[in-house]
Image (tube, rainbow, N blue to C red; front, side):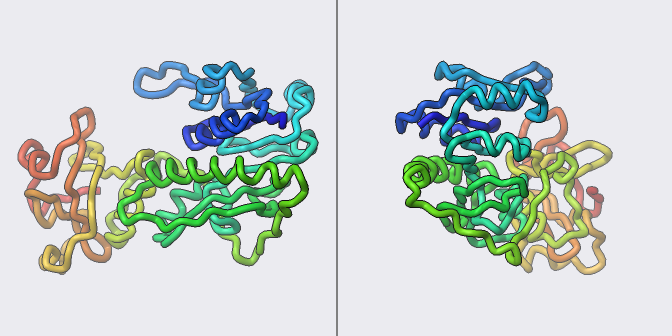
Length: 313
């Protein structure tokens, strides 16, 4: 089948690779424009654009899909399907109407739970027991289309957004190539979503990674998992940013000094740095001061002279 693939980040790579491996004719890859990345601010293509170029697939990176020129380029592909995986832009109805057999999206949740831009992070933030992938028919609404197929999986106790997203991307790719032929033949019907069960998740922002020690400790652990690898969980100590790279909820015996301690107060500094929270305490085992290399808590405590009673924000 002739396919136009829309995607940008690493999450979309397994789906692109699976389509090619399955023998589909990916006639065009649509991805976000190149932009500055990293400290060097060197301009670089998104992962999907790089992979497509390496595979010899024509790449289209328009700043918008709303103008007539972009729509004409997509129409000229004469595609059977548009397949979308974390492209990063909403497709207008006139774009959705172009492919012969419709537009299909690989979405990183079990819809209708977690419609929106950050389903993996939202599942971790909420402490969900399971996640999954939905292959859905796209329509004008945000992830509101009917669902063709679903993969469900428990969330591992140590999984973060990076590891869970990578696992869901692989499973989603397998589900995609298994589902497309059934859609094309008419065997697969898109089941309507129950809108009364829908939950929404916004785009993650850099500032979301700042630790709020007024929250319960278990919430901060969830935020660390949800925001790894980006934007990470960070706090400020003596006016300098510190990344909290690994942490757990402190056991009850470790927070005997909690009564009367303000959120963000250091309760202990040694093999673990224990910080008071709105409920319980956060035990941090690995950190990175701004401009420094990552260290375990013991080395960080010695090198930075962390002392009980000091306050982090």
